[in-house]
Length: 82
Ligand SMILES: [Zn+2]
Image (cartoon, rainbow, N blue to C red; front, side, top):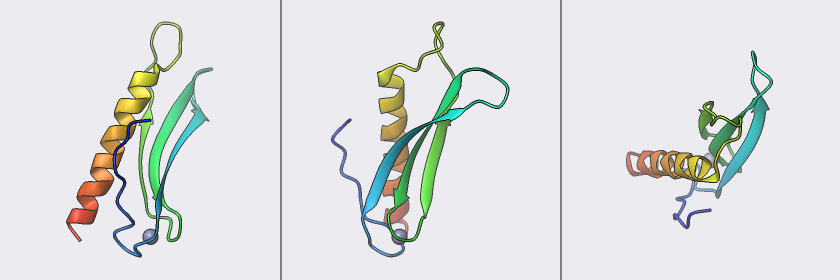
């Protein structure tokens, strides 16, 4: 995973954790992938779901990585606004 510094939770100051979780698509055989950053203590969460696959129905690692970067950037931006 990219080495982006993850800021602590903007609300309680505890450690934030990243998570990549496959989830079953409601209307398809293919899984979506949920990419999220959440607080280990108060469960504040930023998440984004990847729902586009390539032809083979597989998410590329770079797609997941890029999405994770975006979610982390959103999370870090949020801490700046508190
Ligand atoms: Zn928190």
